[in-house]
Length: 301
Ligand code: DGL
Image 1 (cartoon, rainbow, N blue to C red):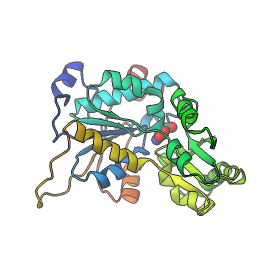
Image 2: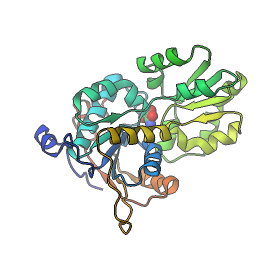
Image 3: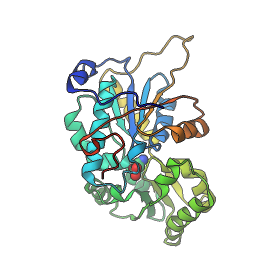
């Protein structure tokens, strides 16, 4: 698929921006790759009347092992691109991007922003053994934002924090159940079970797609905490606060399908969207340059 369009200029952004608040405009959802589709699934269930633009930055995934400046640079560029496409609100459906850059992006964009963070609070509320595992990217786990979350909620609960090296890459190639993937997961999860954990925080939006493989290993010994439904509810509240909820379409109107974009070829995105979300839709390739990725196919880190 040929690239569709380049990054909008500031003038484009100003003229297309929905900072004025058009409730008919779409919601932008973005992730480093395919993980944010787990958030999109929850948003569609909660807010079926909202139009959605989804961007997967798969050319540069995974973010989890990138430096902070790179992650902030990409998050801002994609946020600006989505504003340029007319998005009325932005969901940063990536724990890593939220942890590293939400404050900066909030400062620069004029639309309401919703970030995601690992479900430490619900885990601390629900764990009976007071031992909980957290699976997240290395970048999320080492972020100041995550450390603050832990300090706030982990007073009487022990959190076993495990970087999920290799898991994002697996989902990006649509591997949600191979033998290699299961071995990787077993290596991460068995020490948590041995330590008495009864709860597992899925601290990366890619991981809900691994729930069947995780269940095969842990059975019902771990309660899985996935925050996608909470994010969808938060989006609903924020849209309502800003008077931006989409009107209910006429009974006869066809359901709105999200528009999917990828900075890569989009093949795996289309496959995952079809198999796990039961959505049949094209993925358009886009070029979204940023300071750290001046050339479209640059892999600069
Ligand atoms: N889905 C992203 C998250 O929630 C994955 C980040 C990555 O690309 O490493 O953190």
